[in-house]
Image (tube, rainbow, N blue to C red; front, side):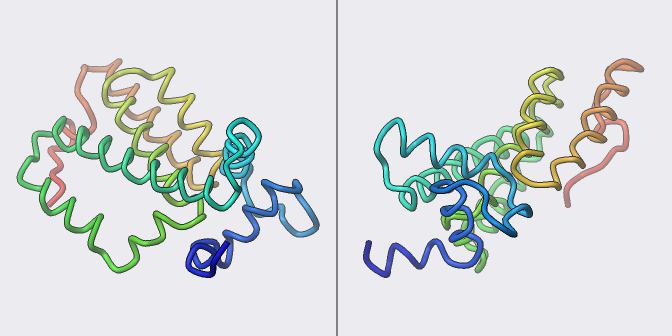
Length: 170
């Protein structure tokens, strides 16, 4: 592929592509497996080259995360913050990372979907998506506390965390 495609797989992207192609090699234990597994599945099932598969996953995950986060904002009826969210997420100088061959966009999507499902009281699905987020990044463990807190508030008085703490985003 030409250089303008390979620049999207610099730094950790090279490691994710290597894991997707050859499996885990020496000193690759710090990279979580879910993202390379999806890249490899796209290659095996559809014949998509590894780097293009990584970009497809990242870009799709980014837009899916934006959609889910929009639904989450609507759930809190904070519609005035919607434009600010869209400007920040799409125009922030480092937003290009969400289109590169990194697991950031996939983790953002899985974490946002987990939070949304927990808020909608689909706790089993939230736990399942949370497990996949842990297979993407270690930070996914923080979602356990969110799911447990949301479930405890649901069992105690059917209030969400946001309503209970009278918290607003801005």
